[in-house]
Image 1 (cartoon, helix red, strand yellow):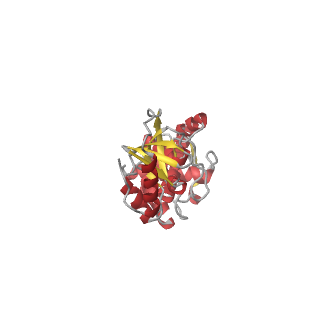
Image 2 (cartoon, rainbow, N blue to C red; image 1 turned 90 degrees about the horizontal axis):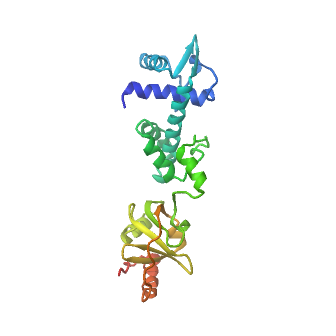
Length: 256
């Protein structure tokens, strides 16, 4: 994205954040949406403001500034991108809190609508950012409300025989992450929850594996469609329990 376009978006985001969408804001008191300092005044920012006015995104009268309807729609999208990016860096990537804001500020200018919706789905349609500020909803959020079930969720939430694909591993401990990777549970792996009781059994490839619920909660999956045909279970009980032992003790998993 061109630098001028980024500055235009900064102005729109600031007006949305500080002016409560429609209220008029004084240019002398308009501050950066990401740090407490005046936003306007430099030649580059003044040129970006003129660009925003020329494109019908911002109206100016004397020292007063406010968003047009087009500007509000654009600003709402920018705020949504930024706050979803904050959640992504905070919840999934687990970067330090001091870097969340700056990293999100960079990413917000790069996200396409499809990528933004994908992040929202991945995160389970969060309603607030890590700082407690509301995240404007998108079309995907409405679809989620209508369906009643998230598209991305812990594998423990799958229905028996429901297909899914591993989206990401919400694991903090390095040894457990290595353990899951060694088992083949990596992003992009197709899985199916075979049963819930007496233990959770997950199928992926030719492997059926009994996993502790605490481990399976850290495997986030994206639902993909109808259940696969029921496989023959004869002779697999012993293998499941051997595999469950390997997961909880760290031994090499058995595959068949």
